[in-house]
Image (cartoon, rainbow, N blue to C red; front, side, top):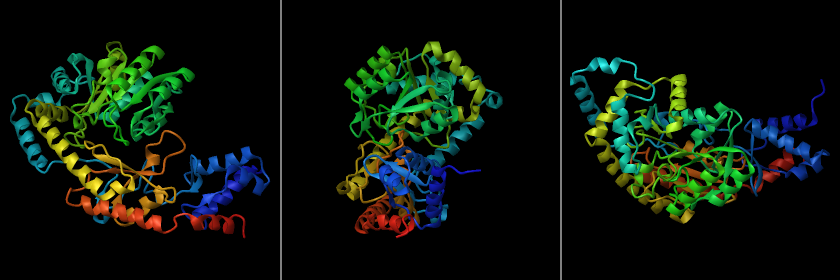
Length: 462
């Protein structure tokens, strides 16, 4: 059977990339140049690069071209992990812990064991959680500016489960959901599993472009808008009150639902009113206790508009029915006795200390970090490739995230997201020093000049 021409060319490229003859970072010819070299149509050249991108061998970057990807898999949406013994610091994932949390857990478990009705903790919870637990979370949310009846709160196994539950309730396969062009990676997993189309809204370190959102909702049948108004991950911005009101107005005028992710809201207690308060009839507010308590404590929640509560419950029943009674009992006990409030205060102080360290090491490299956030954004110069920098850092025991993990478009910016909460604070200066050195060394090693030569030698056979 005759193999299509674009597949033949794609297979040649793939073989050269996998063999190492075309090294990571090699800049490939433009679509037009490839078409001219191979005597094919420009549309066929586009299909070649699309085929290579689909199998993870190349990446296209807006305004820069098409590049061979680093195949070590230390970047991207599902990065390779390092064994603990080889790891200096994990700056790819935030797992904040306070020094005395293990003692707090022992005390809480003893208190649970001493309570009278242990049998209740062994029973199946109703979908959305027990009324007492939902009431505890509703009380907790008062500090976030959300004042709702406990019946509006539905408990989930973390914020990711909450997000999947909401989108599974309101977005059918093929539905269009608007997201920031750099967004939380978890929604990409949900969209892929549920066959939802994510369409990007322009954004930068100053915030979401409300004008872009309005244009998008006018040109596409947007079902829902997913945003992180307070401490956006990965860019760190917090939307001002004016922008939030405009987004609420757009959602009302365009008849779109809002999904507001408030997971990191505890780090910014003085943030403007949440979208849930501005548009309660169409906003799903999701969050969790994972980042303010522990990532292993999988307790999340959805605050749903009244008319959607029934369908969200049905989705919960279809996925997991309920969450662990023991875990919710622990979490709500810590809400009631003030442990959550104390830990949140500790986290805020800790985040500021870590950002101070990051700025001291990286400020002159263009680092951007909100003073209250547990992460920062490090744009890289055009001469560098984020995946190659991530690979070099991994060889030194430091894991980082590349921008393509967060990109809702096919063209990711050339940048790293640095998670600051996972490493011991005593190790953080050394880890960030290694980041600085890796960028400096890569920048000084021409980081791209010989790559065109590699292409000419291997593909053109010069």
